Length: 148
Image (cartoon, rainbow, N blue to C red; front, side, top):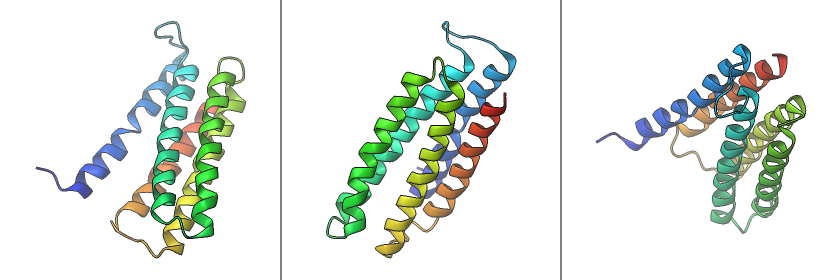
């Protein structure tokens, strides 16, 4: 059986594969299921941003007494709405959708980092560095999509 930290890292990095695959589809102008690579990238990105919003929600309710955590509850809902808006715009305004999602990833990373620092929560120790690397990778992949 894998250690939870090993599984966390593997799943985190495996989560990058659909970004890379759909970016390659976008760069080669290949369509699957009548969808462009850009549309699939944006849809997957919105799903992952919503997933991270749920994590932010969970962190916030674990530390509900802190003002920052109460604000994170509101932010988590706003990030889901941002993701939904990106999906709705993704068919005609890929650049706007990708830019909004990239900003969402940066904002959610920052909010989660602030909560964890404020609450002096650093376990598992590998989590925050992993989140930082994954966030940078995802934002860079969004930038490449925006340039294609």
